[in-house]
Length: 296
Image (cartoon, rainbow, N blue to C red; front, side):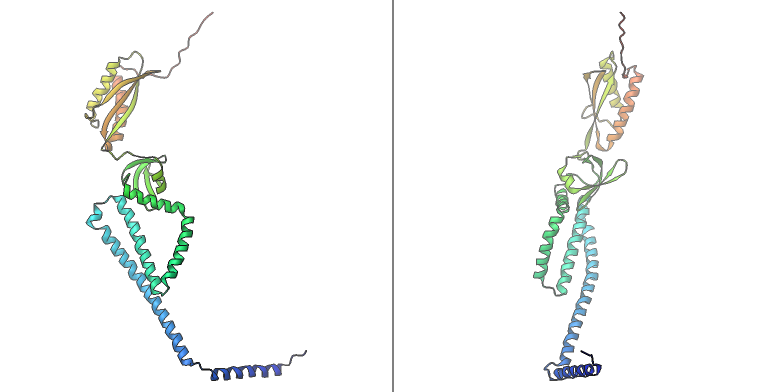
């Protein structure tokens, strides 16, 4: 079948004429249609502008409210760790309220939003079980307060000072100035030692002397030094007793000091007991092997 462009052009003109007649004969008022569309566009533009303004003003209000709350006298009385946790929690909560407000201004039905958030929340909860567990543990740490910012603790093999208690993790600064981020769930499920919870702390040490040493003299030398050391307390009284006889005579030494003076007192005790023993002619044992030769 051959293609006739002239006939095709006539058919196209007929289609256009038919369409025009249909439009003219329709009951639509095109001015009303345009007015309705323009009103919708203006409404959408107004809502978008309102959302932008709400976001800008909302962020400013959140910043001012957060600053006002955190600078209040009541917050000053709280532990620094609690203040840091509340700062993050308040910001997250206020931003969620701001987002919900913006969704409401856009005209999205809240029932649909809640349904979507519920479904998404269930999926996120399954995917982020560990994260949510850390959040719950963070709340427990703030409520139960097993330690505070500035406390010297040991947890999970990490020994250091608590720098910050966050929503999901706690930052610990080790003795050699490393930052260790410990998940809050680890803080609540592992054995935790808080060395700063009490005002006083005991220095425990084992001291050895060679066999043949006057036991009472050795004990007295240690006790006399304890009276001279500025860190060692008289109450509770220092304790020195011989507790074992293996390769040498072994003495258990226990001295009480203020928590802040623990390491200074411990290092002083190690160095100065050695010096006092040397000054008083008390021998410190060395590892040695005795050989007995049997001649035949």
